[in-house]
Length: 348
Image 1 (cartoon, helix red, strand yellow):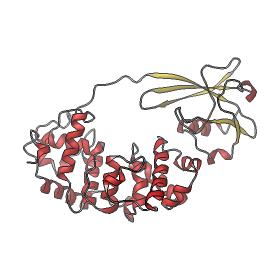
Image 2 (tube, one colour; image 1 turned 30 degrees about the vertical axis):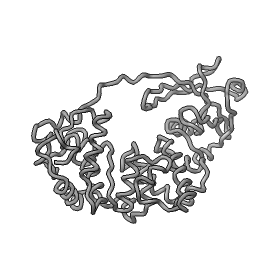
Image 3 (cartoon, one colour; image 1 turned 60 degrees about the vertical axis):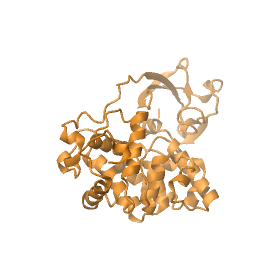
Image 4 (tube, one colour; image 1 turned 135 degrees about the horizontal axis):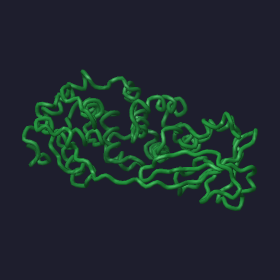
């Protein structure tokens, strides 16, 4: 047994049997018709991997197609403005991914004349690309050997090998990466990597996994020990705090007054209602919305004012009148866009 799997499940298959089992299953039951799989274009893979961070495949597909319509090549993305990039990303959330993808395209254009290297070590020097994304690009774009570990792979490995530590812990993360590096094949790495992800996404799911359809169940520690529901070990539950927020609605028949947020706050450089620390005097409540961030929940109230001069002295950035038609052409935070979509027909 390889070094990484010492003290783990004694039922685990050796690497060659394990990866060939995954490859055979993927060819018959895995996902093989995703848009970024069809041409195996390295740029398409790059875009898809950034979009798939923290977002499900079904959600990404229409955004991926729209993105390629506006930025068909790495060069067109590299030469685009940040506002153009953020506008086309609108709706996917986690806008840092869009900025990192833009920076990655510019770096690749400047450093490699628009070519994407096939070596994980070189890919990890690209802005916004970490070990997982480097491995994914190497495997999916070039079919070269590379390890990749995301939430799906962690779940599969924790159950299969009987890893007891919380998968986000340093010890578990190190062990899972060691296993990933020990188990990938020298050939057909594209199918193997996709197979691992597909198993996690469609079979070895967080709740109610379909173990009976899993090709690895006969040698899976969790299945053999009837501990599928226990693994991966869940981290201690944290209480997510709720914070208030106050935003201002000022509109007229032509449009609505918005401000472009600074680069050091939430929703950096996106267009939004102006935000204040407390409700302005004599303001009427226009509405409210909620939004959940990774570390807290925002409970926002939107206050209506009649004229922008009432805010001039309290804002760090200026207001700009955005026409109702122009709203679809600027980058807005998802909750602000939803609020506008709801109230635009009756702007007040």
